[in-house]
Image 1 (cartoon, helix red, strand yellow):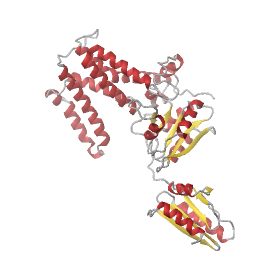
Image 2 (cartoon, one colour):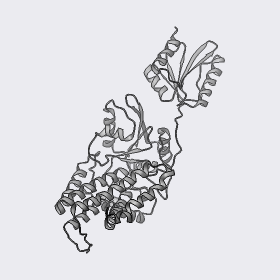
Image 3 (cartoon, rainbow, N blue to C red):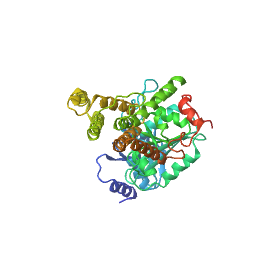
Image 4 (cartoon, one colour):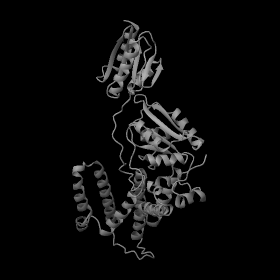
Length: 450
C-alpha cells in the first residue's frame, strides 16, 4: 500500500462507514490526489469547481491549484479530520505530506425572520438563525468598523461546536474581555450544544433562577451593545446570542426604546418597569391586605376568605395560566384555536360558578401576567413568576411579616446573583446617579467613546 492510500485509509478508519463521506479520486497525468468531504455539509457546486481547477492546472504541467475556495495547508491528521467534520473539503496529493483544507461549507439553515419573543413595531425584522456564519454576517452588516473583532473557538470533546465572541477593540471593557477569555481557556472538557449549556460551563450551575447573562435573538440589540462596550457570544446551531455583562435593569430594556424619540422611549421604559414591579409584588400585597383585613387608604374591597380555600383559588388560577402558556408554545398551529376555547372555559364564568376561583382573583392574575408578558427577557419573566409565587405563599402563611420576609429574600437573591464586574442591582445597589439617569432618561443609544 503506497503512502497516499494509507493516508486515505487512516481517514476512512477514523470516520467509519458514514454514508455522506465522499472520497473522490483525481488522477491528472503524473499527479494523483484524493478529495475527501461530507456531502451533507458542503457546497456541491464549489466541489465541482475545485475539482475542475485541479484538472485544468494539473493537465498543463502547472502546480495543482484549488479555486475558488480559500485554502489552509496543515500537517496534523486530527485537525484535518476535524475540518472534514466541519464541512470543509480536504485534498491529499501523492508525494505531499500536507492536508489541504478548502473552504466549501454550506450548512443547512432557515431564512432569517423576526424572533417570535422579541417583536418590534419599528426597526429591523430579521433575527439570528442556527448558522453561525449568517449570524456573524448580520453583525458585520451593522457594524463596519475595522476594530470589530470576532474570535472563533471550537469547544466540546465530541461536538467541537463553533463559538464566536465579538467585541469592538478599545470600546470593550478589558476586565470583562479578560475574564471571559480566561474562563473559555479553562473550560472543562464537556459537550457544548447551546448557549445555555455554554453559560453553565463558564459561570457554573446554580439554583438561582435569574439569568447571569442576557439572551437575545436580535442582531440589532447585539450591535447596540457592542457599540456600548459589551461582549457578544454566538454559538453555532443556536439562534440565541449572549450579551456579557448584564444586570437586572439591563434585562428590562427593549428594542422599542431605540426606535422612538427620547421622550417616548423614557415613557415606555417607566411604564414597563411599573408593569414588571406589579408582576412581582401585586399578588403578594393583595394577599396581605385580605389576610390582615386591612382596607388601606385605597378602600380596596376585602374578600371573606378561608386561608386554605383562598390559597387554592390563587394557586389554581396561576397554574392554569402557566399551563396555557406552555401549551401555546408546544401546540401545533392548526390546533392553536382550540386553546382559546380551553382558556375561556378554565378562566371564565364557568370556573367562577364552580367555585374554583373568583372574579377578583382572575382580575389580579390577569394583571400580573400582563406584567410578565411585557418583560422583554423571557428568562427574567419566568424568574419573577417563581419569586411571586414564593412571596405570595409567605404572605399567605405569615401575613405582613411573611410579605416583608419574601421581599427581603428576593432582594437578597438579586444581590447575591453573580455577574461579571457589575452587581446585579446596579445602579440601585450600589447607587449611581449617572447610570440611573441613563436607565430612565437616557437617550436611545449611549455609545461609549474610545
